Amino acid sequence: MFIQRNFLFIIMVMAVLLAVAMKATVYQREPVAPPTPSPATTEAFRAYWFGGKAELNTYQLEQAQYGAMHTGEAVLVFVTEDFRVDKQVKAESEASRGVSVPVLKTNYIRRFVTGIYDYSLFTSVFTPIGSPKFPNTLKVSTSGQEWCGHSYVQVNYKDNAYQVSGRSYFEQEVTEDYTVEKAMLEDELWNRIRLDPGKLPTGDVHLIPGTQSARLRHKKLESIPATATLDSAQGVAWTNTHIPGVSVGPCKAYILDYKDDGKSTPGRKLTLIFETAFPHKIVGWEETYTSKEKVLTSRAMLRKTIQSDYWNHNTPADSTLRQALSL
Image (tube, rainbow, N blue to C red; front, top):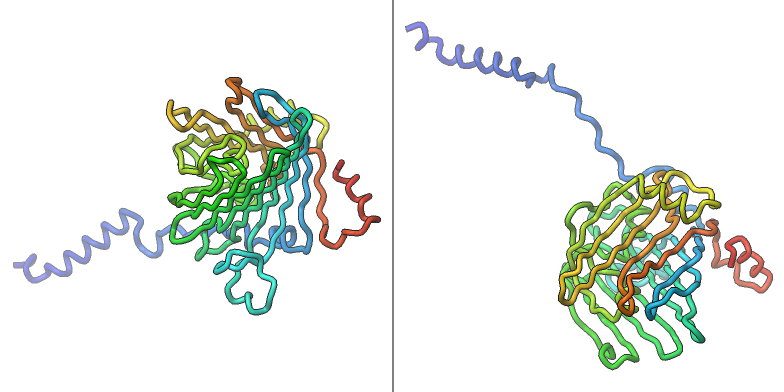
């Protein structure tokens, strides 16, 4: 009778005892840590990337092409700007403000000489900064010029996929228009490192290879599997070996290993070296693949880095500023 009359009371006491045992009462719970702020919202990030200047980097380049190594130079320009999400172009009018997001843009220039003639490759990548509504890189465009002719490819994020449009003087690539399933773009990795290297994917991943690499090797863009690793030891070893005279901080290596499937996807390895501390400067990279039945490694090694509002320095007198970049 006692149990029947006091059943609810007994249940409540047992529930309280269980909660105490499991440390589940409001007095026993561990305080909830506040969410880690996005690096893009920090004062240091905004001071560096929204201070009215671009970051300019020059690199000594060793480029594999035609089964041999060739010398050249590479340039990375990082700058923020407002970007229209509807037309996927730079916002330049007041009317565009309501349809724009801030992006980090990479301009990646690569120039090298093969025998008597030269190559020039130029890639632009537009990645939104801290925008939950637009988490994907919105656009990549790449042009290539050499003495035989020139080519162009553009990749636009649309309808949860990437629309690829290409034009080339090569017969097999003269007109290309196709869709690639959504995946991380290799071309955006430079931006992702600068924005937040802690979010770089590791393990088994799918990526769309870089547009410059695809053009040089005459490969169609597609999402392919790779293994991604992040390694501090390799980052330090790389800088000690390849840029011993350049002042850089501790570095990490982000390594992508594309496996040879024996069919349409040849093996290829890409390694990006960057400083561990903000602003995560890119100090170099290398790319290993087969060229004319030889396994060769292209490599870019940092020479100089400066910040500049370069768009305001376009007179003949400003050409002396190129010396600061060893150009």
